[in-house]
Length: 442
Image 1 (tube, rainbow, N blue to C red):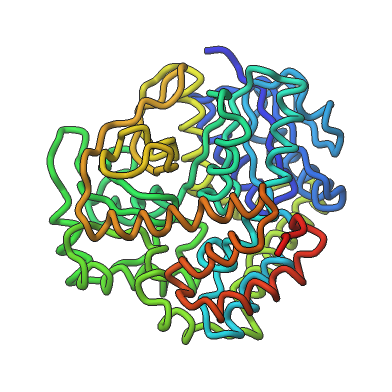
Image 2 (cartoon, rainbow, N blue to C red):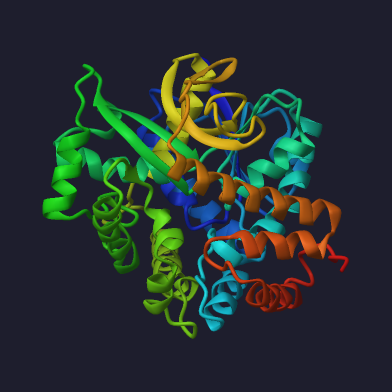
């Protein structure tokens, strides 16, 4: 197989080490000629880059070259794949995304509700610039984006790059949920074949099969309802917040037993309860700063000081492995089935054609070949149409610089549903995002 040239955009991320480990574990399926890390934050990029260099030297001797840089041309010239994982504004702005809605008794979460809108409005401009830069130096590279909030970013990129067939938006959350299904079933995640429909962070598994075609859905449902549900992926297995989130699946399945829900639906189905469990003075972003950020910083310093990974725990999580396997299927025409984000175009026949839906697709060298879903029931259709309208209005507000569209979006969102409250939250978000959002005309 041809060795691929890869650039990871957002190379200073705390997720990059896990991605490097995933590339090593999956190197037989996705062999690489070169890896480049690119970030605009020199300090973070330097630390992660030095660690990645040590890991690769020890565990990926076949790799011909490795580099980390803050120079766009150096990063993007003549690459085959670009993985994009950026966070415009960093965790400091995520604190505002969560704190402001919570101060009004509304869900404060980085991808859902007002926080998701704020993050999305920050992400759009940087994503467009990055893709323009990649296309300047590598016209035919596959661009795999997993920057959040993926639904809003995907809607914006569809409008700006309508003819670019080599941009694919992906989220690893369905896969992280399937890791827990595989634990229940005593199987590997790669042995499971899902049927799924929805929007990003807003969907349902209708069936789970094994590769022999056996329907395992009822086994999973019965286990969740009787035994509960817990995260199993290494990145989140011991995280108290994620443990509570996965436990909530039992409640959602009890209320709506038809399909297996994405964990993020808790914010839309039980918004008041989600607010009660959060502390506006110490949000999820603060937990990440004091948790994963510090752990990764200590790990990096230890590896750099010792110039070795000996005695260090280096985890391979589903976040990285999913992305790498998606890339492998595209690169080598494997035709593997993964859940990805694509334009509807009749896939879900009773939803608008231009909606960016999240569905299973066969991934080939010519791109994703999504499977038809057909009509979905009224309850799910209604939820999706409301959420989809919110996402489109957020993107409208960004491109049209329209305050009223932003207000309509927040009012429509199930976590708010109150126009005066939406206005107060929006005004506060505008103030703290002054350096990131376009100026919205009233």
